[in-house]
Length: 260
Length: 250
Image (cartoon, rainbow over all chains, first blue to last red; front, side, top):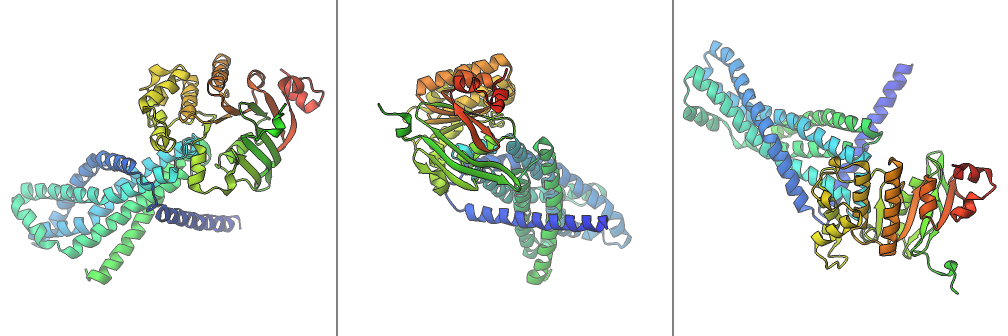
């Protein structure tokens, strides 16, 4: 009985959270086109989020390319299909693995950072101080961060994809004596617009989700300093879940419109 | 001779009510702050002092009652008008609330960059920042981060930031809480000197009796969300009422 009550309580809390997050997103769309625009803060956030995530995304992408190729090679060789390696790796990385893995890394790196930063600003009354000084904190803190993640994530994903392909090319070059030129020629021959466009479009949504959930959790942080950790942690958990939901919808729609 | 009652108050609260669920925090609180006055609102922790001050600047929305600042009803103002009115009010937060990702200079520049032109302030930003820091004796800390400052220094920088737009009204939320007695005295002296220099009207929320004794022209005792007593420090400290006596007893 207690257990079922608990489930009902948690389910209710989940739907309340979804409703509040939707209102938060609605407020974003309501205010994003209204002056004043905080361009300077937006550029600063783009720089911070982009520049500071480059190394992590690059290293992860490189290892992803290496491991993916190393592990796929024996299976393809078994079927005598190792020549398909560049096109298989290229399509997999550009369509799915690159965007999802990079977005998950950014959810951990950027989303939790936003949650913790705004959460600590909330509990130490810095957001109140901003509001009292006549500055709209939602515009200054939230809109700039969501815009920055939305704009920077596609760039980080493209960068991560490129590095992953480079990692894969190195393995192919060392193990299969495939030249870099041949490798990348095969990759670009295999990749079509129907692979690139849906992946790029969904990466904007990934970025929006990371910024939105991180800002929502941090901006509405309660319960003092303990709440900051909770905001940061739950920002990553909720964003990761949301990323897979967006990915599923994107793949479903791409299947309809591009017949992939 | 004109009495205070005939002068228009710079800040007026009438019948302010605010509840959080079943917790009725303010139950019809009234207040008038006059020009150049230091009004202290005292009350024990949880008596609704901070809720009242947050309602004053629009951080919390009152359930009912009216709040007029310099003749404007803040509950009827749109966001832009409210933001403009907020530039006429300095607010010193209990925990200083300095932006910890910015240096002291950037903390002080932040409101200036946004409102200097709108307020027709012709002085150079740098000069205004230095003037504000000189007022609190911290011009050497201009390039430090808030984390590098002591609690007392943070409170001084926060005071400098509250003063940067040369507000007519300053709201102090527990200005001496968390400070050692010597630093607390320094902050109180600073508040007095600023009041003399700029002729500001101050509303001070505190439970520090020493602070109230030194700085107040008038004190309101807030108990159970209403004005329990009102008067000067001398009047209230001599009161025979047990609640008031308990509060003013050292």
